[in-house]
Image 1 (cartoon, rainbow, N blue to C red):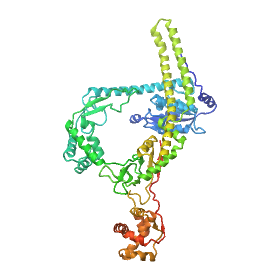
Image 2 (image 1 turned 180 degrees about the vertical axis):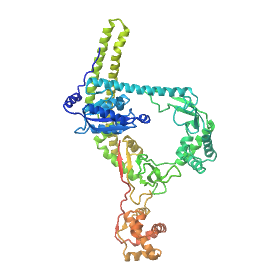
Image 3 (image 1 turned 90 degrees about the vertical axis):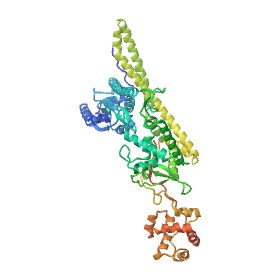
Image 4 (image 1 turned 135 degrees about the vertical axis):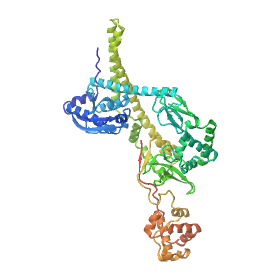
Length: 636
């Protein structure tokens, strides 16, 4: 007895009937994974199949989308061209009617990305056609084949994954000092490399370097940064052959393999089910031969901890650290300069202080922390009032995009009907076959029906989960609005730590697209501006007249060929414009002596006496400095 699935009473059926009267416009979607590429397979091979299929169907080929080196387990939103395809499918008028793929595995090797993509297209009246076995989802029979195709792809994927992970688990549990893949920890090398029984042994050359670092830190009292400098100065390189960085040295020497003689397989990041039970096997603690004794490891830990406490001090908090991307593509982090302007705060590009000592600084600008944080936070407040944008952010965070809840609810109801009908069919087969009193016959008669029932139940569970996530999207958007609204009311009194939490919620990123305006690039406050600010004075509005110069000249040293007068005018010009010394010198004709003159006159009180003598000249306020470079601020 056979069972035919009930057709979906959706817009898809109506769209299919309407499309029969005209030529369908088709696009093809091609995808190969990294593993496929390694085996020599490319999208050109798939393209030949889809192009031929479209021609045989007499459809109009209107475009191609392709993702190369992309896993089939990823959602549509995580694949570049598939995401573009979905965006184009939403356009009005719609540019295509059907998406052609060479086989079901191109859509996805897991049910979740497979069905969510197919359903999202169904909801807007776009079909999916599969070249292999020649079917599409415009009919109930085609949808049945599609279920089987998706079920087979996921079963195949899980079988390979289980076999691989099971073998690794067995090796970790049974082989002493087992090597379960990847590069060995620093201080170790792989014995019997390339065989199932490979294991880790001490690498004598790297162990010697670890013992030398122990000597530098414990016996000579160096911190890790100074130990790094010593290694590089003596020509001792890292495993890669490059010079050491402090972070690289710390990660290598302070690993659990070096300090504890153990390595965890399936450690704290191992995937678990909702009850916390490991999905692919228990964590295994692999014991390794020790490079350092227990006592040496404890002493090294203690010395490095003490050095870190001495150097840390009381640090400022920078909510945008790691969220600002420089023109050289490095990240900005916060830095305090306690000797300047009551501990001036800046963001500094990590490329301007390279960890590799031989590397040249990038030259990216320092950015005033207070100005940057205030500007970014203002943009966050503007976002708080945009409910539609917050809904988009929430949908992206959940990873589902916008969906049609009512259509999905109808799909669940339809699947329930199909499941009920399938159960009735199975019962009828069992009753009819039982009259023959042959249990083997019952099993044979119901096997195919039970397989299809399981597929329907899996689809129903996936649809229900997607509906729950749509509800979660709405709740998340409400949380975003509530949180940011709360922040807006308490701004600017909100603590930087609280700001950082909201910035993290919004997945905020700032991309610097140009330099900081002149005079602010080095991260050092303008000393001329600082003097006028502290003195509470405005600046002479224009170049000094000869009479004004005659008033102040006796207060200043004699200069050859007007050098001193040009220095005075340059200092006033810098205060009026806020420009950098190089630009001031270029535009006024002064020399580099101008900045030296100012520092000397400021220190001995001369500059204060000059301004007092010019009390009656017309003055203008200090200009507001441009502290920030051009930037792009993005959320989500």
